[in-house]
Length: 254
Image 1: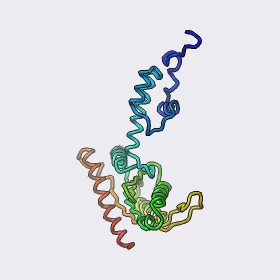
Image 2: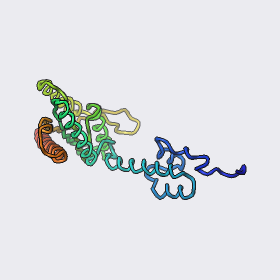
Image 3: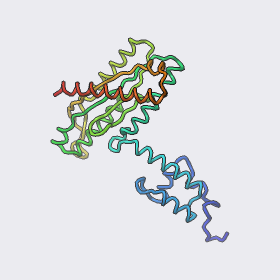
Image 4: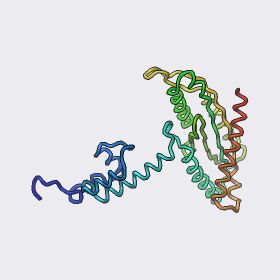
């Protein structure tokens, strides 16, 4: 090879992009943002010999994964969106179903639907502050749930949380459920928002209507229906019950 000849990707750069973060490395290399990259761009660089086939396959695979995650994530809060919550809830309930069949563990699923009355904030302080309020609510919810619980923004100012509780003793399950419900209610009474950029956050009272529903997983363990039928039915029933409870709570706050 002559001194001024550039080595081909196969000869000298085979591992430049290939890694566990192939997509991230690719974006840095070509100074692109996630919203700018396309499959066509990757294939163009492959055809030009700038990247190897291995690189292209890895980047395309990670790009597909990233797009799938984006389709399941709420852009404003970073929580799951409605679609992501549906998918992850089914996975979680399937896991609980196998656990109850295997271990006979006594469990309860607590589902919470949370409606924030943020219209006054939007009307009086503007939608930018309203968006900030929604983000603060999302962070408050995340701080008050456990690893393995699911939290999502259903849209607008509505959120939903799914929490499995594993307690052998029924009295302990009751206590745990009551504590979770009370903690969410208390923490969602006030949020802290920054009215002007760079200013100190101030407390802003909000009205949070919270509805809870519970499903004993014994019904999952003993049912003879298929998994899809069971889990879809459980999720729909729990959401409907929590919705009704939330609207009752909302009426009581008017």
